[in-house]
Length: 94
Image (cartoon, rainbow, N blue to C red; front, side, top):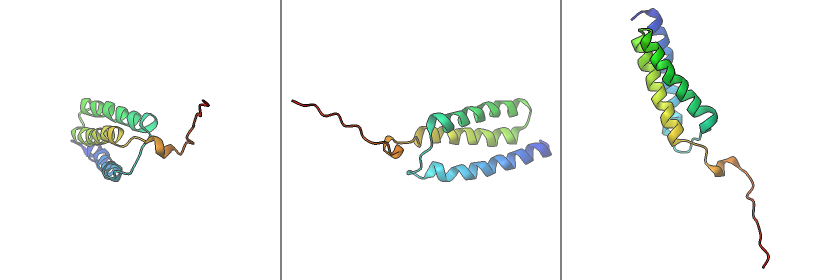
């Protein structure tokens, strides 16, 4: 553990705090394919890279962030009604 590890980990834990409102609010919605899944994938890869680089605290904080973003991707997708798209009605004449 060194000063770089602690500095990056502090920033990582700050990002965890900023993700909590999105995760805990049932009305929040995040685009799944444009932001949630790519963010979760990148954080998952960074967790392994920081672990290999022997930065354990940073790896832990980024791993927690990855878990939170996977939870956001699963639990908080954009619902179709939230897109405000007009409903298309097809009338069939009999």
